[in-house]
Length: 429
Image 1 (cartoon, rainbow, N blue to C red):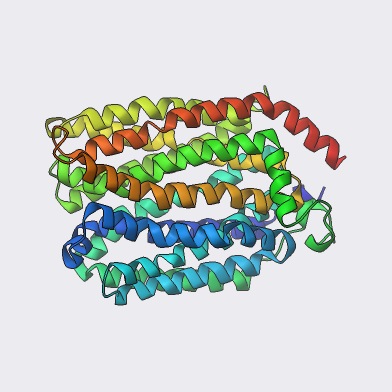
Image 2 (image 1 turned 180 degrees about the vertical axis):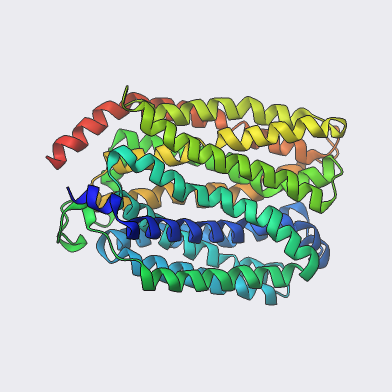
């Protein structure tokens, strides 16, 4: 079987490692502004709403325009080159952030992250689906998905350390240049896997609709449709929390920036562990019942919701307990990612995998990275003077509560999954 050969090949593992590293660097670039909020806000005199616009607007607008089109390109062209180009361009624009002269020029450089994720994210996951068989795909996806949490960890600990010694501008330049270097390395050492596990079958001759027909075909699949809805709410909650939690610890718990970096870094480490655990757990449990492919995300989101709200309910006199809760929140809130993306690859035809992944990432980019930080900042400004204590606490609580509709959508996806998986197997036979 072609899949088994690819799975065993050291080059497949090297490709997965490079894809995960590039993902980590991209998320480090996106998360680093959460660490740099205090000096950037002070230098440019920004309000909470303006901070949200800087951290999310350029990314969301760009991703909204190019996300699905680049996903379609990944379904029709060589994915390795697309990943290298998009990650490299993203790194170059990130480095230009060091020369920002104000809020709008900084927001412009944030577009690099959108180009990086819009082009490389769907193509990377499509490659991984062809490198690893179904029985190991959740674990492989968890290694790639771990890049998000690892990138956050790198930003919150390594980025905070570097920024404290060299300033926020040098930090942006360093991240961008390292990303560009790794993108070139991927282009030189990785190779394009056989699409769909069929030797010699290129994207140009894969069956199935393309263009808008591919988007409609993905949305017509019940599992894919509900996963898109679930991801929209889960990413809106997760990105909003991740963007503002560093500032929350400084403002509400009175932590110094370096201490806040350690706490949020531990939470990111919890997400790394949670991502790996969920992939391994899903691969093990689906041997008993296929519905566990979605059941693992369902359990994770169901536990993350009360833990996150409990964390936000604690005051500065309970910082120790708050630290434990935010680590637990990071662990459970990441459970949905790897099994959900693996599930998507198991119910969608190979010719539409990148498009489907792009749609899932699009709702996260526009809703999570774009609207989430802006909405959180706007709610914080709106609630100022009307609530007790720092309004950011209440704003974050409202965003975390969006995990409830995410849970309901995952429940619908789980009901539809067995039939969707059977239909995909029959279509491939």
